[in-house]
Amino acid sequence: MEITILGSGTSIPSTKRSSPSILVNIDNEKILLDTGPGSLRQLKKTNTELNQIDTIIYSHFHIDHISDMLPFIFSSKYDYENPRTADLKIIGPLGLIKLYKNLINTHGNQVIPDKFIINWLESGESSFRFEKYLIKTCNVVHTDNSIAVKITDMIGRSVVYSGDTDYCNEIIELAKGCDLLILECSFPDNLKTIGHLTPSEAGEIASKASAKKLLLTHFYPQCEFTDILTPVKDCYNGKVFAAEDLLEISI
Image (tube, rainbow, N blue to C red; front, side, top):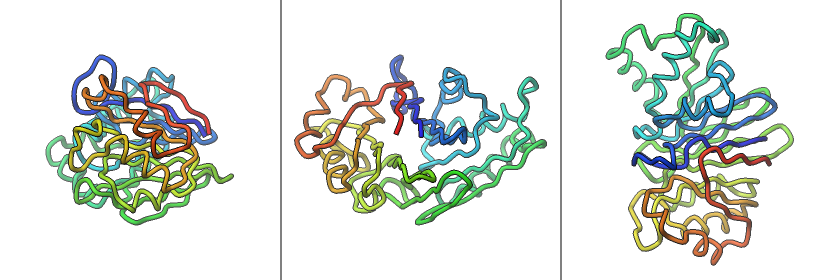
């Protein structure tokens, strides 16, 4: 299983960090976790074509996590050099299908595929089994319909992605014993913001979950000038590191 961080930032424009998106590759099955603005351009830097993506999973509907959904569909429909013909799975929280129908009302046929089918799957406390991987989701504390995601391959390796979340037991349970836990870490400890994690909270979650490795991401600018790793190491004994755009990790 290979993971590439396409965007380690937030909604705040940055020359260093793109908005949230992660590419997961399992035996050439490719999954996108969120598609914030600029995700398609970041994906191109990995030499991955849109028609190679099998599944997209959305953690919630905030613009910095979902805004490249329609560009993905639009580009897949009108890419004459690499046309998409394979079906696409899009998984997200409750309300995903209603969201898409509302977007069709605005944009019309340009976001309705004609050479492939989108299988829309809504998820809360859910599990989905596909040929090469298992997806499990849980509700987390951010918006009314935010989810975290666990992806497990056929030999048991697993990655967990929190999306945006505050501290909650649900993410701890989902991440139990995972090989890699990817947690948002939006603000330093002294700038705690409701609905988001601080370094100390991320470390406590990873420790209680006995995660083998912890990757912090989703950094607001305030994190750029703060030591965010030391507070994590004070409560978590595993390996911890900070995400950068295009960082590659194998598990």
